[in-house]
Length: 401
Image 1 (tube, rainbow, N blue to C red):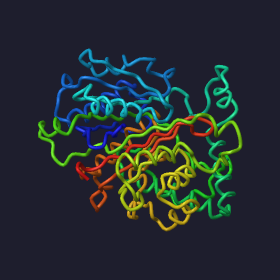
Image 2: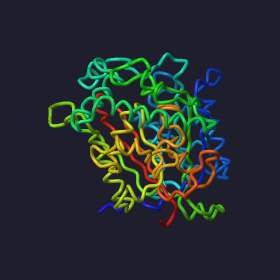
Image 3: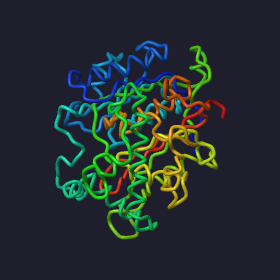
Image 4: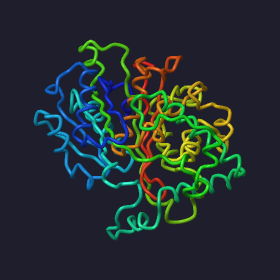
């Protein structure tokens, strides 16, 4: 029986580029920026890395179909480099490959890097193409804002939430993210806003307005992982280790008949249960210190906090308005600004989330550092259309906890 990977893998170093409209930089520049920080943090040389995983979601835009761009940009020493793609979970998928390689004993020190260069390619996060398959037909007839607007409507109908109350809760999610992003020097959006501005903003897909939607960004994030023993031999102390890493992929049920009511994300609920079991977490609302979730839209963050079993079903609106997830609340969510304000370079986002948890747990998050010492942190990615068919969940924490 599988025993899981809890505490078998330590984060040796991490790095993240500044996210935003990086007009003067190409994808390789962004990779090098994130990698240079991670390598210096790890205290090793490129020659010490024996395998790498490269996450990028939109191959037509800038990186091709193999690991070659990463190998060439970083001048890796002829090691195996694997390119992975899993919608918006592509960065976490790269992290999963590196972590599993170390946990299995196949690698001593492994690299995971995700990147996306989208701002100067006209990519706006909407469907691009239809190759003729049944799945691609969904992309041809749906948009991300439209699909998530339907989630909002279904959630409100199921739980009896009035339009005004839902709008106010979604507005608070966005205001919180902007306030957090304003304290993050690497964030794409650093402007503070208020709830009235969110509520009165132009509508994109009712009930979602402009400030309920994240944009796309240019950026890269990177992790170097190894075993705890190797990390200690390199002088590392107070290790941050991987407690769980789970991936759930839909079998298509949600899109093919009406057994799913469209008010929640089934893949998130499955991945979360598996991750908590792997990490040995019985009461996540009491045990998780920080969250970084896939807030592509404000409604997504709201619903996700129920799907991760933190807020009770139908209770996320109350928790949000009680400031439970604010930076000074019980469990901060998106303390770095999230997808909404840190940015969403698709292939980098999952690793960016782990980066923030790592900084918080090593006391290096600067102005946004959480005052109470974080114990467990959780990241969450969703991807795919029209029912968010991929979910990846990662839990990291201090070694031995």
